[in-house]
Length: 106
View (cartoon, rainbow, N blue to C red):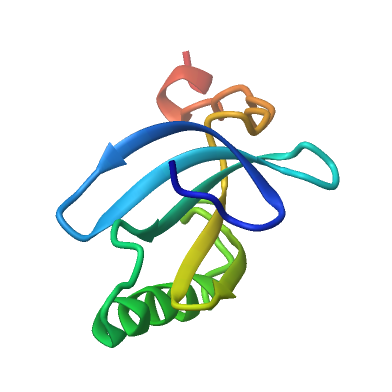
């Protein structure tokens, strides 16, 4: 099982050709997170660069439609992107639909 310092891995969600997606909890506050890391113990420099680039691109967005990146963990030869676990986040409050002009005129 892959380990990431500071996080307790709960489950493997998906294994791709070069990366693995993990469900985990942050050790300090038990916050649920998603971790994306290299599948190999010793990934290529290209794999590490790809994860760093993905982290940098996600960090630029401040939009509820884009998953937020919480951290980039680099240890030895492994890099891991830590993302918010959107499935555990509370849903935004629903607002009633605005009254359409057609319905208001009746």
